[in-house]
Structure formats: C-alpha cells, structure tokens
Image 1 (tube, rainbow, N blue to C red):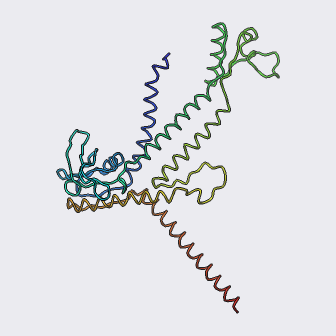
Image 2 (tube, one colour; image 1 turned 60 degrees about the vertical axis):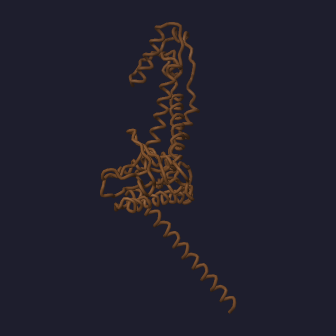
Image 3 (cartoon, rainbow, N blue to C red; image 1 turned 120 degrees about the horizontal axis):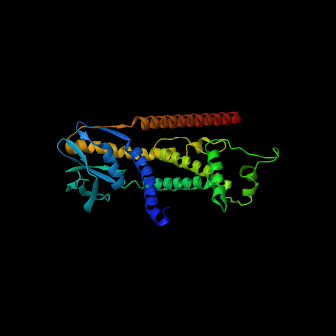
Length: 325
C-alpha cells in the first residue's frame, strides 16, 4: 500500500489537472467569441488567447501572414493613456524582437484596460475546489461498515456475502424463524456471529452535502456562461423565481461582450491602417444569436415601458382636465 508521502505528488498532479481542465474550458469559450476574416493567414484564436494572458497581443506582418506573438511586454515611455507604444515580443520557438505599435505591429487588446483576464483563474480555482469537495464527499458517503473478526474463515465468509450482494447474486440464509428480521446471525451462523464486531463508518447525513455541492456547481457553471454572454437561465432555487432573478447577470455580460467587440473592431481597423490589409469581424453564431435576442428583448421592454409611461401621463392629464371642469 502506498504511503501518504508517496501519494502526495500524484494528488498534486490530479488537482492541477482538475484546475487546468476548467481553465482551458473557459479560455476556449472566450476565444470562440469572434471570427476574423482576412485575405491572409491569421490564427485569431491564438491571438485572443495570448491577450488573455498578457492583456495585449502584438501582431506583426510576416511573409503574408499576420503573426500573433505569445508574449508581449511593454517597454519605454508610457503615453497619456498609460499605455506603452514599444514592446518586446517573443514566441514559443524562442524568437524575440522589439516592435513599435502603429509601425511594426498592431495591438490586439483584451478590453480597453489592456489587462489579463484574471477571472479565468478565479473561476477555475472555484470549480476545482468544488470538484475536490464532491470527490471527497462521494468517497466518504460510500464508506461501508467495517467488520472485525479474529479468524480468517469468518473474514472470507463476510467477503463472500459482500461480493454476492455487489454482483447481484442470491445468498442462502437458514433461519428457524422466517418472520423475524434477517441479521448477521442468519447469514454467518450463530457460532461465528458472536465473534464479529461491526464499526459503522457510514454517515448518511453527509450524503446531503452532495446535493448542495452539485447545485452550487451547476449555479457556478451557469454564471460563468452568463458572465461571458450566454445566458443559460439556470437556477437551483427550489421556488418560483422572478424575471429579474433569472436574468441577474445578463446586463453586465452585455457590457463585457461589447467591450471586447470594440477592441476587436479597433484591431481590424488598425490592421487596415498599418498594413493596408482589409478585414472584417463576425461574432460567433451562438454568441450572436444570444446577443441579438437579448438586445431585441431589451428594446421591447423599453418600448413597453415608454408606452406605459405615455398612457399614465395621458390618464393623469385627463383626470386633471375633468377636475377643472
């Protein structure tokens, strides 16, 4: 049996893999926002990915290819907006160079603040912690009663009964009183049952924790999708919900998505101005459908509210005219 000391590296690796899974899933979601259309090669998803790590991605024109650099570090003097215009860039192959924005490169921004997407790490940490708690709770909930005996023959009989139950096989019980509850004596015999003691490690109350952890996991997943522009309208509330409760994070998500869209549009314009290459931007069909539906619904709500306000004002005006008469 492995000691706890020997298991620690393996446990650490599993926990890191668990966190990386969610980190990669959220990153893939964000990198799928846009589709860039240029007449030359451009790995747009990698461009977005690098901006999530660095806050910005420098893109240069290399042999009829728009190359996004994996690492972009500001250098030199800050401008009036607090941004660098000169950068040291590097790729995973070890190539490095110094570039100047608007001359040698175009900058793709992760939002107007040019900051890394720290929420990915935050959400990945939360997901990994919930997953770890679920694993621990599941394992605890299935701890079986532990039987102790002082001879191997009885121990083997206990194992046989246990495996028969697991395999769905019937086990024969000889009893003089078929109306009484079958217990350990019926299965193992009166002689050996006296030599057996049971330690119950199963705590059924802890199983309830699974429900709350599972619901929190679903809630967290729903909020991540909504945060990045896909309102799932999922909730674990066990009661009737109001419309505002269902769409809690919908409007902040639109602000986030609009900010990233503006940065992407600016990038397309800058490529045209610096490299004289025409391009266009499309929103991913899934995000576009969700975005258009939300905008349409908000416009309908605004029109309905305006109509209601107008009717209320006209009603008040009629009442005032009647009072004067």
